[in-house]
Amino acid sequence: MILIVDDAPENIISLKKVLEKNGFEVDTATSGEEALKKILNRSYVLIILDVQMPGMDGFEVAETISGFSRAKETAIIFLSAASANVNLITRGYSSGGLDYISKPVDMNILLLKVKTFYRIYEQSRALNEMQKALRAEIEFRKEAERKKDEFISIASHELKTPMTSIKGYIQLLERSIKKQDHDTSLQRLEKVQNQIEKLNLLIADLLDISKIESGKLKFHIQSFNFATMLENLLEVMQQSNNQVKIRYIPGFTKEVEGDEMRLEQVIVNFISNAIKYAPDATELIVRTEDQGDVLRFSVQDFGIGMSHEHTQRIFDKFYRIEETSERFQGLGIGLYICQEIIERHGGKIGVVSTLGEGSTFFFTIPIHSQEN
Image (cartoon, rainbow, N blue to C red; front, side, top):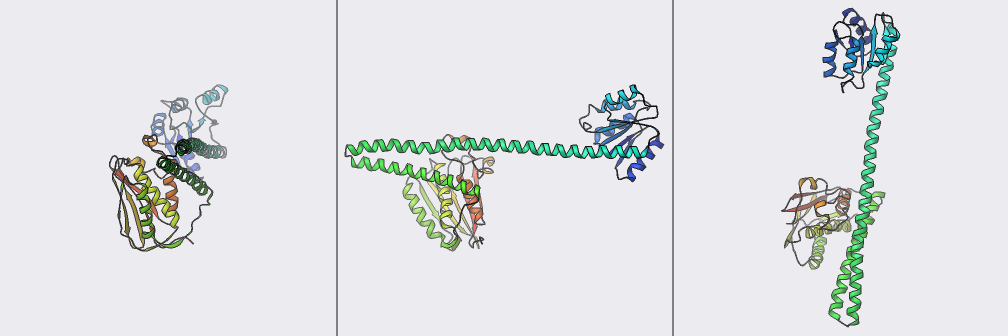
């Protein structure tokens, strides 16, 4: 949009006609005061400003405009019937003008200048957009780097913890063996095995995240009985976690086409998290539901729960809830991997949670595979 400011209506009419004929959108003002009101309410690419006007002259208008944030990128061309002299030109440029044309106006020259300023404006706008995009990209690189460094730190800590425990238990085991204390030796051996299992799970997660990033996470799709798999898995998990009752409410008996091992991985993650984040609870509930061609699986705990803000990000890669990160161990990638597994099955994953009351993690998958 171009704003023409001139106290002579005949000048406005002739300029407006030529500019509109050449495809430019034009607005007009017959005084400096009227021009300022319009500039306060809308943005202009270019202002063609008469120098000699009653009231505010063109230089005063330009000097005032220079303080408007809305007109920061607006170009100004001065028009004057007076012969151009050094003082006039100098004042024009110092007032914020970018060019100067004497009357009577050569329309060809004016059009050339207008087209040039429009091209500069478009290039400037494109450059600004590129700069914004670049700044956003740089911030995204910085954030990714921060998350990577944080992840490496967390992973190092999480891997070191079971390794330290294993080393300590082995030293204790060695002592009990020397004393021929068979019962104590078995107890300490069991603790070593538990720590090794934790280590295996951490390493498996690290390998899976690497495969996801490289697009090499493999799936072996076949038909299997989901209920049988789940019952066997729950039996093992109940034996390993006898401090909490795993209550199973079955509602699905059909065959499912999917990767049995990967779906087991998701279920183990859900149940392990439910036990971890509900340390004082005595029960958790596992449900399966038949929704026609879709299986719905859920695990409900009665633990610490989480806020709505956290439920929106809990499946993000490397996301850990700061308030619980010191109290509960984890790499912040387990649920991200679960999401990848469920989405690769054509399903959906989610959580419903109330802070202080518990969480229900769930997934739904079609019973017939969508993999080629």
